[in-house]
Image 1: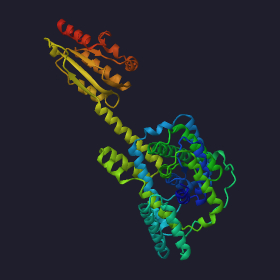
Image 2: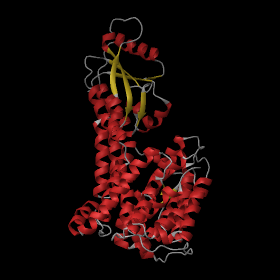
Image 3: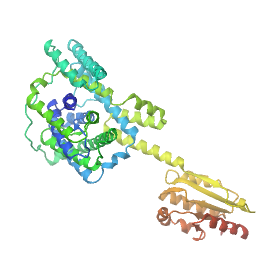
Image 4: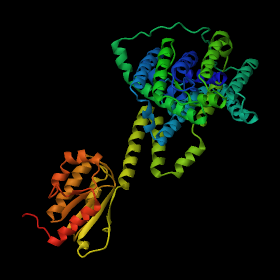
Length: 515
């Protein structure tokens, strides 16, 4: 697991605008702390592509020195979220929204590597699409052709080596071969450079109230992203194998403690890493020990191998991340979405586009709003008014009785349409409104029901209600549903009683409303 995490930790540290050292420190410290205190037995935590994407613009504005403080602030928020029982809230995020911002993240990660793949650098925080375009204009093509060859070689090895044998750590082998080639042929390409030879001593980052205020919103966004990514990763891992149940709330608290620890050691905010967690499970991990060992082995790299790691060409890391980005959303997922509704396709691609154009938090917010609108429309479409035949033998006058059933929920999204459907019933003297199939009743729906009763009674039509559920009686009472009836006794639990009462009204003759 550690040999898969090493190149990714270095790459995500650089991609975030901080440093390769910060990525490595985060993988060690956060990886061990999250393994001990997190809610999953097999979760592997550390720097991730999504976190690098959200950190890059923050680093551009506030500087790399703000990142450890951000890690502490976001960690505290995560601990509070875990203690508040918000861990299960991630299940409310629709799948299309999650996959949409995953596609957006993948596009950003890929575009962020273009300058590095061309042997140049981009302004930290610059829109990745614009940075990629600008890189082609500023590249030294004598160097760029060499770095592009390294990227192609690394990418090709990552694709081909697993086909030779699934157990081969393709990313690490590709990076090693690229580093050896760079050293042997003395290729003039940028490398990682100096790395720490020991873990830094823990220290509280300097801050003041003004600084905390400036970083409050970025910290909140980082905490939300960390919560979403970590819980999704833990949920995926629990379904891949019998690794025991996971606790969403403990997972949030554990990830919060991991980010706090990372910040104290000068690292970045951390999250559960879906790709590394999946590799961990597929490798046979069933306990927390595997993730702890992963962190310890990376610690050995810091103390014993930092001199060798310093010679890794940046283009090799660009190749690793480009390959990672192209595998973040599978073709099967895209095909499944296209086979679903047009609304799902819209949410998926719009969330991805907003992620690419703006940021992850805006994308999640807009994606959730769109998904909520689609869900409400679906619920509203299920609601309807249906006329039924009266039970038993048909009697004279039954044609002047309408037995009407309301299906679905009578709420703000459907109330107006249901009112219009009721207005279509004419030529009747009594209407029995069956509420036993009503799945939901909110304030708007109760108010609409009162309006429906008033409209019928004003036309001289007696309204009888049947089957008002106990869970709906409170809101019905609050809006005066019973009081709107001509007689509050016109509420029945039995359909037979309601029909018998309706027939007695027909026998007495039509009732005329007061003028």
